[in-house]
Length: 84
Image (cartoon, rainbow, N blue to C red):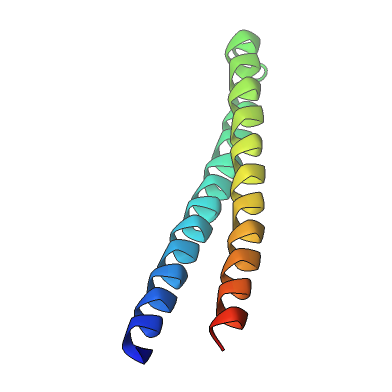
């Protein structure tokens, strides 16, 4: 039974790591988009405006990932407490 509980903890930790990695990659992408906006602002304002919309979408996805991490942390914390 303890092997089964350890397996669940491993899966839970893996899930959290994937979500956290996703959030980190989005943050990197957000920085790249911000740099592109600065670069093309004076050359092509309409493209910069499109990039700003993408920037908003990326920020929303980062927020969703953060919320999911909080939810997973709470859910897995409750599971760990109940397993004791």
